[in-house]
Length: 378
Ligand code: FE2
Image (cartoon, rainbow, N blue to C red; front, side, top):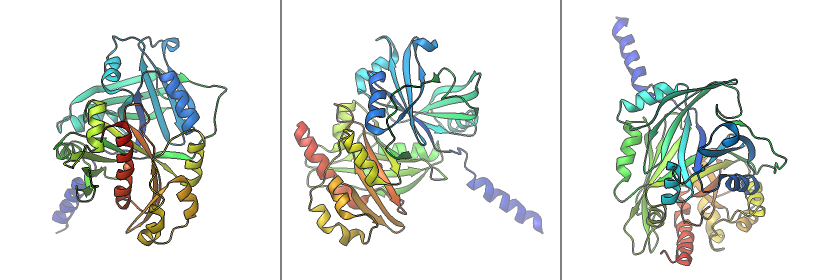
């Protein structure tokens, strides 16, 4: 009698078992024209700390990489040393941008096999890296554009970053700004490509579509976009995917696609537990943010209800507020971090809300359009 029930229970377990368990974002790797200066910028402006280095002095004669960290955030800034290196082509085409969204996994070999057997395109076969501090296993697959996902298994590693790197200590260690971890990473894909990449994350990586925005949610008088939010099983990794939609003028996603010369990472959202302190520190260090009109704050509390923060402080800094069924969130967006209008950052503090600020889309996109118009790209 009990046998069929057990069998059923076993089948149910198998059905819900995550074939690609992710422990979060391991690191974000940027390909940049000058990694030494980029590392200095992320330390000075964003409060990251020196962590590790790879370059000619460590036996790497092709590239230089600087690893900077802040709480659970790890950024890797990589540059080629010669024009013949493939990374030089990446920078020539895209400008500075994000190459890799690397995901921490318990088993990088299994992650590669699971995704490859579901149709992924390999970027790096499982590779074992060892040094005196232990073992890192790394593998990788392609995603949209020239962007890749590395799978990083580092449970048996104690070193500064990974084999091939040495610890990087300097006399210049600016204080941090309270940035904690990657909340989500947004990709911009081409016309009618969103559902292809939604299917990629569903079928090949086992993600679910948790939210959808269409052009009636995300449109202004001039431009529109559509977006679907993909999340892995435990919710640690969230990848919204944007595609442009038809509007009277050029949308921000079209502008990105033109200047990045293809699909790529639009923004990375960095979490903080105190957005007022974090954004105050970032502004004091020269980080530039988009501003909404003062009129936004005249009606915002009617929309979002009571909040703990002082509204005057939020208005002064230009921080936006939105509420969903589970709570509210505070968010603000930097201007592009490059001369090309491509990658930017979001700073986000969640007070229960698990959504992405839909109530702010209109004010935010109008702010982006004002910047586009200044650039002559609207
Ligand atoms: Fe975002």
